[in-house]
Image 1 (spheres, rainbow, N blue to C red):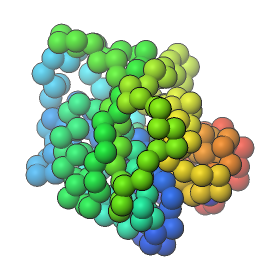
Image 2: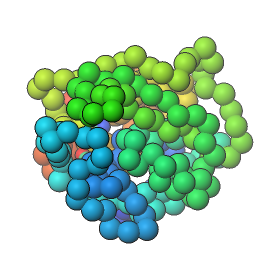
Image 3: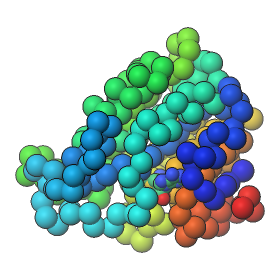
Length: 228
Ligand SMILES: C[S@@+](CC[C@H](N)C(=O)[O-])C[C@H]1O[C@@H](n2cnc3c(N)ncnc32)[C@H](O)[C@@H]1O
């Protein structure tokens, strides 16, 4: 089920404990001082980042704070259940603190290699960070031989979304933390990478997206009729 709209409102309509797994790449400020819940993000370039990376190729709706949706993500997730939340270096500390504050227990910080490297004076940033956490009792991933550094490369060149993620990366998380028939949620689906991965592996999918063009792209890529 794909729905166009604001996930802060749409999440309220999702029944408590009805989602088996959450895999999401949420919006956050990319050139401010990160997503500080205690103040308004500034609009300066973070230390170390080069001018050529200044907000190029961003998307419009990127100013949402973790506390605006994490309480609902915790509520809708089954107990026990896993969540994968993507973030960047600037927002990592806040993301970890907010996950804990909303009741999640952190398991690991996963990384995924990307090819579209962010220019930086102090090591080029060629990795995505993915916080892996749980609600309720601990349970193992399905492939216990899997490692925390993933070598899937990000889509480059003509992309469906400025921050498009690799379907194979999402697939790995879905295969490790859910079963066929389970419900996977991505409240910030963009062009639909999580949804494609879920459907490819026989999972049911709930996806929300606020931006009509990205929503249309996700529907097209998944070959499904949208719920408007
Ligand atoms: C980081 S991108 C996700 C990209 C996605 N992983 C992909 O592969 O295309 C985050 C998405 O969340 C959307 N978004 C921002 N605020 C939202 C909100 N309140 N409700 C629903 N979607 C929102 C943005 O429009 C953007 O497409």
